Length: 265
Image 1 (spheres, rainbow, N blue to C red):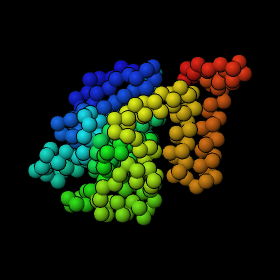
Image 2 (cartoon, rainbow, N blue to C red):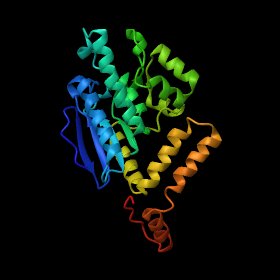
Image 3 (tube, one colour):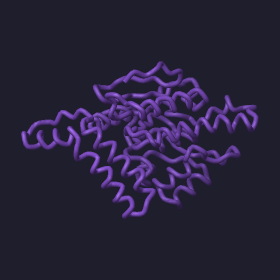
Image 4 (tube, one colour):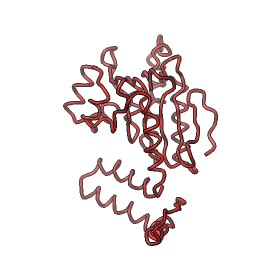
């Protein structure tokens, strides 16, 4: 996949089918500014339109201290209300693009993730987090509130009561707590978050890409429906895979006792 050179995101291939994307503003603890929102939106849009050989993405932060410290309040200092809302409209588009990207995206929280940084992670499909880091949605402490789908994604992950506690107090929590509450998938030892995430992404990328995308879509949108409607949506997604070369290759490989060679067709 040919990507432009982003100002705030480094991208590199990891193997044939995994893309490693790194939020790259280490001097600002990878804080989310206007340019990073432009870059995230562009990256997620390109993956949606034509991911090429990319079958899974790992999103992490540069440096050892932070995945993303949240919105860049230095950039926002002195912003007019109109400018603030215009910037946030861009943020909203970036968060939505991440959530609706058909390619699985894994967040590897190598360090702290606060505010919009945690919301970026919650917009991803999986979250691996460092045991040495802390995480929070502390916006109420500075006179705003989560606005990157944080109240929605967190509540869907941990339940209404826990989400209210975390959002209304703004208190930080650990990787272990995040796993126990259902917000994170795995708590990792410091320094192992990225290798573990890349290993998991490589495993996903080895599966049939059309199957992975249709399964992700069914889970994501099915949870917004009643059970039977979600099931009908699931079957529509299932039937789209029946007449594919990957389905035929998977069955052939099983019967021939070999590893399938999926082409995404």
